[in-house]
Length: 548
Image 1 (tube, rainbow, N blue to C red):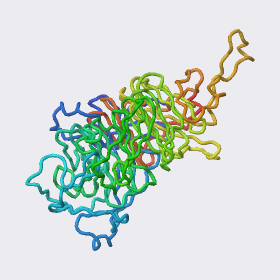
Image 2 (image 1 turned 60 degrees about the vertical axis):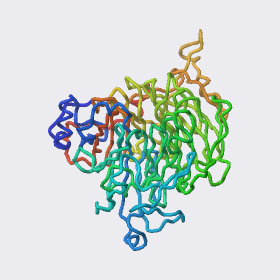
Image 3 (image 1 turned 45 degrees about the horizontal axis):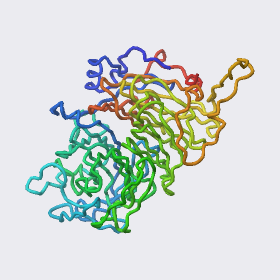
Image 4 (image 1 turned 45 degrees about the vertical axis):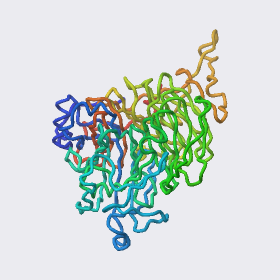
């Protein structure tokens, strides 16, 4: 493990003044070291200082990163004012980092919304989508000033929730306060996602603790000066279909306009934006709460189109593989479940060492899955073996966020296909960011000595590695003595409050605390500060130092 050295003027220069001063006051360092160099604190983002303390306890902050590119010039003549349409690239490795383009035609033939003036607030009951011009907060005479912000919205934005408000801020700006806030009144935003190839401009999903789900255009929200959602599609309105907390939302990769919403009662719903649900969108009663089951809507026009009963108790997090074929879920019952989403089949899964699992993430190539939870450990699952292949110890409290770094590559890689090395990160309630390196060819399977056998010649590999796991099997947690153990490459205390979110971008690492503070750590190659050779860590073999 690499320890952090003393702070230097170079690191303080790299960090924005506000970030540097707040870090110093909390006894935190403004950088951390890795074999490839120093990550410097660039700046931090937070909610307005006027936010009342009690609001912070209403929800745990989650973060989403979105990049809006240029809008094609021809779209201006083809569309009425503020009627965007768009296509988006799928996020790699499920880290919610998305590049979007706004096109000038609706593409899928869906009816466009008239955002200015009264477009009608027709609603569909029982979970169907309702369309309205303004949602959330109180309306000033029913009309909000739209388009008074002439910006085209181009740029990279950070989206995070605190209390009953969703905040949007420019990632590159040194301003700590957000540029846009959207209030939800009596409900709280819990989760959000931005990553579909939508063709009607609705790129942002928002799930609330009331069970309601919204899809909106991020560009349109930035152009509006009000504090309410504009031009939103509303699903599961007032919890008509499911009134339990919406715990996680995700766009389905490679499936235009489709998304899933997971709930605290163990159910997951599949929606299609283009459909407006009819009055009858109910599903049969679940006979066995402990068994996985899928029910489809009775009508082809219904929305949602399907209900998945995943587990008994809350689903805490969901993640799709990059190709959209597989879906991973983790829940309060402590199980990871991996599904063939297209065939609606449980493939594999297993139990944590203790209590609930809180987070999961896919490797960019879809070969491995990370999980973290209340056992303070990080587990690495192999899709090929359908079992745990490594576990990591380093956190002193619950692991609340995990993610692979799709932008990192080993310093020396002669044959990446045969010698794959993965970098991933984890954050926890112990306020620490941990970075790990996983080299599969250097995994050393622990050997067990049979009772009375020779300690030199009679050791054998445990049955955990010999057994073939049948498809659809949920396994108990293997003994830690049977699975290779990882040690963190870097352990750094990045916040003064428990952490809740982690994102890897091309230029930086973003960490978020549960009370609404986000920090941006610039990668060594993107830092403006030059590190003295005496402060630079010497390259080391990442995987060999991480296995015992």
